[in-house]
Picture (cartoon, rainbow, N blue to C red):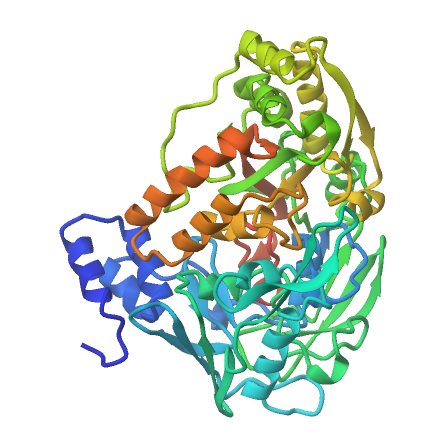
Length: 556
């Protein structure tokens, strides 16, 4: 046995041999514990990748993909896949979670984890160079980035992920607007993020955490040039395969390939995003006229309109992408959890899936844990029950229901369609919802402050990752302002449990809390789809909607 091998890996190998776990589960667990992807795939008896060999890819040309181009204030604040797609062509991550939810080293050569999951040793690749100046990526660069996202003054959502094992909250002595103690955050110890040598960084955690490699691939965990201090725009430095030459919010982004990129590719000479606006018809027209070579996302209506275009290929992938109608529990109408429960009992999930997604989804259960998540615990379903919902409202003081505004956006159209179907179903329990559809740019200004809104959430390979981002008290992306001490404690406990079967026992308690007390109505899990011109080679649809332009090529 390798002396650096985690002691649980032989158990995983034995479980795989006895068919106690699936090959996919083996790959996920073994690679998270530091086994190389090549070794894990070999033991599982499957091919690591279906992507064409580099020498077989055509070289040159320009690729254009339709995608919204939003304002980017700081890469460490990136909060949507579209923003990360703009940045990721220039700046890169320490790890990479592939389309099969297997996490690999990327800017890292490898990592090692202690038996108790508290010490993670990150070994940086020695062949990675920044575009400007040709300087080598070092541990100093990595430590600067990790410490920066842990600074509450920055406001990165990484803080929510790191809270519980690298970051601790404390009473800063200030009060919020309601007079409650205002929490602040800091690294739990001076050596929490430690430089070992020029190519090695160690994370010394106060609690066990299984998902560190996947956290390092979260949207905003880019490795930025410390000299640029979080700035991003034309000519931004990075270790990535492209140089960004122009970025205009609402219009697009243009890139040119690096000739000295450390990794595989790029095969294109140039690459660009084209912002086609909120109208879904604009995407169909742009693909039809070949104004663009593909879209970052296409909903079911768009796919149906384009699937018979002779030059178009359709791609689909099952995901944990979803949408939540989330309520602020501190809003007067939603303070009583019986109101939140009534809203959940009001909906017909299958009807919403057929109406909003044309069937391209599966029912969700109002706890934001998907059946495809390895720690999922099966609970009783949440059926539509109008009489029960009305009684809950009456018991909470709303026998005649109430009226409230829901904020949403018009793009993609399935989100607005979902809001409209939900509003129709809420009428059946006496709740009148006024839909306020804001242009996307305006919506993202209020998505965390509106008392009731509909928000899409992207794919995450582990449920503990989603829950820590969206529902842990005081997390930057806790748009519902939900705070439950028991939930927080159980989530921290779950994050330190290696075996998904054991973790699911804690997850069952978390899911039950969400169904009873939680702030969301969650109708479905969405099957993600898009279209691409058949001349585009090397494209694979990632469940998180990520674009990897350096892997793509244009056939002659």
